[in-house]
Amino acid sequence: MKKVIAVNTRILVSDKLEGIGNFTAEIFKRLVKWNPDYEFHFIFNYPFHTDFIFGTNVKTHIIQPPAKHPVLVKIWYDFSLKRVLKKINPDIFISPDAITSLTTDIKTLIVMHDIGFAHRPQDLPNSWAKFYNKYSKKFAEKSRRVATVSEYSKKDIVETYGINPEKIDVVFNGVKDTFHPAEPEKIKKLTKNKEYFFYIGSLHPRKNIVNLLKGFNKFKNSNNNDVKLVIGGDFLFQSNEIKSVLKELKHKDQIILTGRLTDEDLNTWLSGAVALTYIPYFEGFGIPLLEAMKCKTPILTSNVTSLPEVGSDAAIYVNPESIDDIANGMNILYGDDTIRRELIEKGQKRLKDFSWDKSAKLLWESIQKTIHS
Image 1 (cartoon, rainbow, N blue to C red):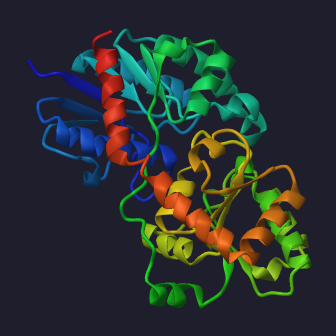
Image 2 (image 1 turned 120 degrees about the horizontal axis):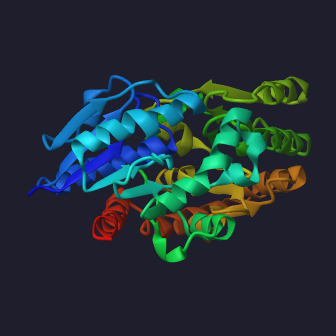
């Protein structure tokens, strides 16, 4: 008899994949292909793109209501999802966005990428901060197993929630094969031959955009050069502070906001940068570090949470709270070609530890442990 796997795929939204969406898409496209004898049920809350149906062994469900608010999320998981799971009767339910139903007895595996909201609730709208801080521990306790994306996050979940470490599996993120050093002519055409530091990600409070802007401004104050700061990503929650700081900066005309980028343009901007400047306050993993390594771009990043674990010796680390530290890091990377070359070489070695194939195998091991628990 076929084993049946149900998956919460409501985060698979075409052209809007962020970290969790990419994790889900990259891993399940492999698991569906590798396991044709298993039946996968993908559960959406919106009409879905056919690109996300990774094989003929995938069956689909769309259930209501569209879960955009914590109240609707609870209804979706505890009532609508419960009904579908009862009908499917799967061997396991997998939820890659760390939320699950508290009203079903199906064996459950959640992927809890990080619990930043437990430490920095101010980085989320109040309703979501309250929701996560009320229920996340319960989700982890209810689930048979928990997967997370770094040893840092595993330790954090154990220490913050008191979850047994034996119940938690580390499934690292990977990086898309499409990232590679772009051709010089392509870089020149897109970037107009500028020198620039580059940030990629949402413009979100925990990404520390304000201190990145101020650090760059300080770097410019001490350098007579034409280096820009290019920021790739959309404004999200609490963007007013970022916009007001931008207006006040002496060197605001040296800052370029691209908005959301296609993978192709992201690859080109990243390939041409002096360095990736990715300096968040909190991160469960930090996929942009791997993307920079694939593009042979040096990295300036934070010395906190999971980032030193992921970057290892292939990055320069700074205190995200210190504008001076950020500016000094930019000075080092801009002024020393030898350090930049060394970081690139170390990045190529570090990349060998990560791939979506490896990630998919690790999650599959966690799935099997859950099914047979």
